[in-house]
Length: 213
Ligand code: AP5
Image 1 (tube, rainbow, N blue to C red):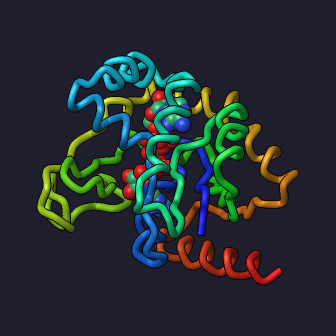
Image 2: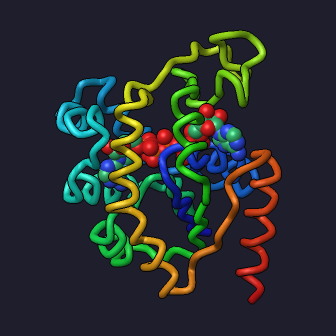
């Protein structure tokens, strides 16, 4: 199964991707995670991407398309995958359409006011990438990941000024993808507010219904 999770920064794409990955036994492909790893290793890709990510702007399409083309050559995607963060522009969607046929596009809908709170309070495990929140989803021990005991960090782009820029970029450049995939009858709208496990169950139900219809 080839799935895309579409939604603004903080909509819960990463949270839901991890639940879906465990359930469906297919990998999550998070372009944000790939870029952050490249930044950590100070590779040429990382150095280039950092310039854009630090100010909440999208990394140029040609860089992202090359990155995803490479990633989709790996053996682990042969039974499908969950795309988290790609495509983010019409051009990226067109390029992806040349190499893959998505079955479901899950649109996670969350109001902007909730997103700012979710992102500014997010803490991410530096080892396994699990996301927590200082109020909404507290780890059992402050600063420590429940899953792997890794250290919890705040992402460099999770400060209010950059979050606002990321939301602007989303509305301007990524929102049009909803219409793009609606025309192709792929979109499943999901209310992304409320309990993450409930949201997960609602995604699974909708996927099954769309597959049966
Ligand atoms: P990326 O890493 O993709 O970030 P993003 O899209 O901004 O999304 P986030 O990871 O911030 O949020 P999420 O939706 O995964 O939410 P999460 O589940 O963590 O991209 C970062 C940057 O990389 C971009 O700005 C861009 O520069 C670049 N980039 C990446 N891909 C690109 C591309 N294709 N083209 C160009 N540039 C690209 O949840 C957030 C918080 O909310 C957590 O604390 C979580 O615990 C909490 N939470 C989750 N669900 C709920 C819930 N139901 N209720 C309450 N709280 C919840």
